[in-house]
Length: 530
Image (cartoon, rainbow, N blue to C red; front, side, top):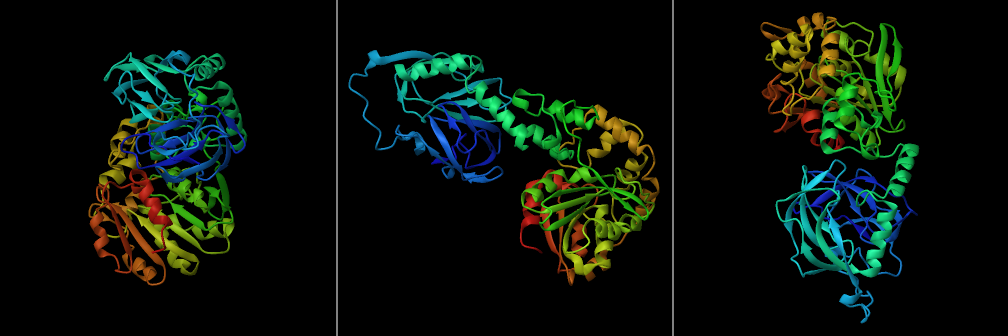
């Protein structure tokens, strides 16, 4: 049984990011077999012995506690290298008496690659001293990368002969850090692997080629670092649509910035698969993703947003088996319908749903000004609304950052937009110069000017959803999510809502909880209905 390894001293659980082999595939000791995401990094975990993957227990996206099963593997008649803490199976055959020091050979132990972006690592701490013996799977060194500190296990039995690089030293991947003594047969395996893959440990080019081909053929998991994933999440970029230029087609930060700036990618897909619904007032752009037979969720963005602001939430709902509909509201994105008042935002939703989801109930999740549209729409067809979730909703009180609203409606240059976006999120919003320029050019068209004047004035908000929300809460499960660091709309507006409404306050979020705490928001959405 292959179990979730401990990749760092503080790791209690890990998320399966991708399987690098498939059931039935054979692997050699040192081959990367799975990608695991911790709270600090994404790392490939190598096989500590030869074997064959029998079947997968933890699928991509599953979070598994350290020591719990990941997969069933066949290790043949050899020693059980999957035993916890590096212990070997009791059935391990005794070492033949003739295998003595004379049967051992010395080789270099090189700095391993613990993550996709790792080019060098710092020796944090040696866990063995010269002369100490180690068993396969036993941790022998702690290595610090730019993302985490992780223990590195021995890939075979042996003895640490000498330390070449001491604690605190920075070493390039593939450079020697110690001399170890291992059996001649193990050394032969190492030499054979080096002959087949002369670049760096764990590279296994022939395996990687098969993996890349398989991923391309099956639309497999995207390879990206936590930094890149966060950047994509903040700006609504679906990493499945980005062509990676990094090692083994890994998506790099520059690839995401290229998408945001509008730079064409020669090998990528379109930014998203935008559909259009021809409605009486014009064409509405939207995304329709997920399981078409699953429960339908309608996501409505806020002022100056569009369908892409929901990327992280939409991805999570899709993984949970839901169908997700995300329209660009009138006056926004690619929708070709104007909006000069808050009522215009909901005016086309009935026709839109009649076109794309004419029957059955659905959940509505809305953000900011989109919450006003959500409430107005839900009041019209309460029997079809299974639940209503409002994130940082407008319409519950008078206060609002009017300068932000007017600024976004009147912005003409990138610098203005950059300053305004900093108000949205606790985490910094990173957009390339090209992306900021493109956004500023779109805002400079003035499509939001009339709407901005209609929703915010000198005295504050010009929209009020409180009475409608109270009516809805009597028959529709309703909840409100607010970030305690919201700089656009005060979270204290929740004190005015009906006691029937469930309230969730997120301590590490600003006006965009779906950006700042996407996992928490998704957990709320997937919990029992309010």
